[in-house]
Image 1 (tube, helix red, strand yellow):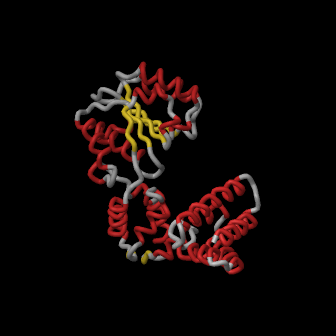
Image 2: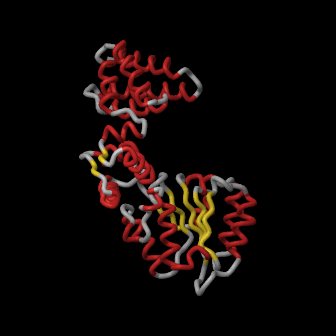
Length: 313
């Protein structure tokens, strides 16, 4: 079984983090009347999960008959709004409920024409249907839709909330976790709970004793110490050794140029050098990343990056 589904919160009390957002949403659900809502925030922090919780709390066992989930990244054209959404919105609820709920996941993928059609649908069927729109970037949603919704901004989960999630998983799956593993998971995932759970399941398949080294090997991310060593060799003037260490690290973890350059940028701020030099190094990282995206040879560009670091110092 996929752990993401197994450990998905079933109610508000199981939902860790986002306390202020949950409190506001819970108040609407308690009144049995919710407005149109727009959930905005990074991936993997609970936007879809809390939408399912709302439906289950409002409708109980009949939630599936009164709740429609559509993913806009798969079906993003105007025909989806005119057909699927409108057909569901205009019909009566199953049971004694005042309205149905439609969840449009990743709605920032909808075309502008589809968003205009959605605006009219939201306006015409307010009495029989409520919309929950979920997106990563609220700026991609047209203003008429935003003005019809209460906007909830979700933030990446903090360490305490992630620690509770990890503790819950380790307790249920009988895992042993090394100290500071939570910090490593937070650094790798950027607060994405879905990714954290997937990493833990992958590690547990190999070994029930979860260590930082096992995590870095599993997700193909270089250990920060190794990246830092590459940078320290470069700024000390030892370009050849720095280049060899970088190549060994990339081959060891199977990293691409774009993967390693993001880690280089992060570790640059941990170096014990002048802030002016750090700024120059980060600027150079941005330039080299742009060249890679445009199709330049990765190894040549990374060598140029290390050479520039050597010259800066």
